[in-house]
Image (cartoon, rainbow, N blue to C red; front, side, top):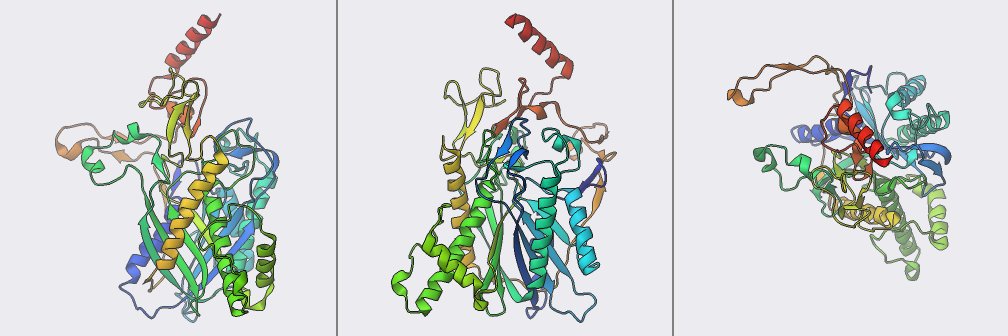
Length: 475
């Protein structure tokens, strides 16, 4: 959340990383007998499915006209079980099938939680993070730059998010029960690439040599179990943009991460059904698909069994799997790279253009030319790795829960430009928030317009002169 345009707050994903992952490294020095209360919840946040501009690509004509699959808010609460202690702490993390969080949405949710629970949940211990899908309804953010193409504030989008987030947190709170957390981590390949490799090469060689890849390929997973050892949820972080669905898409979608969540939740439900059928002596009905995703297709018999199990008193805990976002800045799911739509040749390496035009340079996913197939493939690669980490997770976390949250004014900060004192340069001062000139060029996942180019640092008057010259040539 920002207090104003010049205030900066750690992203919710990084905030949660500080709250859970960094804290988990400290847990090992604490008592191994620590116990937690674990709660999970999930609720629909789909919002208006027609005539509302989508948040992400900033395309004025990209208005929703249907649903690919519905969006959800997935909540996780971890609390210290020492309820008699006034120092007992808890954290709540919410993963949204939305482009990003919103200060306005967060403040509304916190206001509702305060009415329910007093100061139990507040801006310090609640993190709300979006998976960065570019195919969800827009108009719910508080700043003009984010709602220009949505033509302003959209109450239906806002209410769907606030209602869904609140309900998912309430669910997680009401089903808190003793449990444990296990951690696992591994590398996932073939699910992301750097969409601006030329920009990455501007980093110092010594820094680049520290890493094997030019994007983050680590997946980190937390496995949540109840007091009996039965799994109740999974939360993992992996860096990849929600841009498998391109800017021609008009269907509401959670993109690759939203699909991965659905795949893993369906996989777990099928496992529960399988176990139930075996207990009932109906082994012939067992589906031996193991960790295959549903692919979004329905199965009448499976659905019937799932509904029967979920209505049973022995199956009161609904398994929640969230695929959260992490350092996804220039990390694309379009793993085939960027090509010119007119020639089929690779785009210009330095500026991602085709004959000087950025609009013709479009990235391709692994299912090209089918963006739905690309979404499914990238989702399945995340899902399969998550299942592997989930089933092999053995590092049990223990110790006290803690969190950190801060606001930092980054206007007027003094920055030294002299590297290691080798040369003498004057200190500089940061300026108020601004958009760089080449921001309007967009990216190969979703190009901008009007011949803006990536990496372009010319001034606006020079650009206008160039546009005027082109217009005169057309005459």
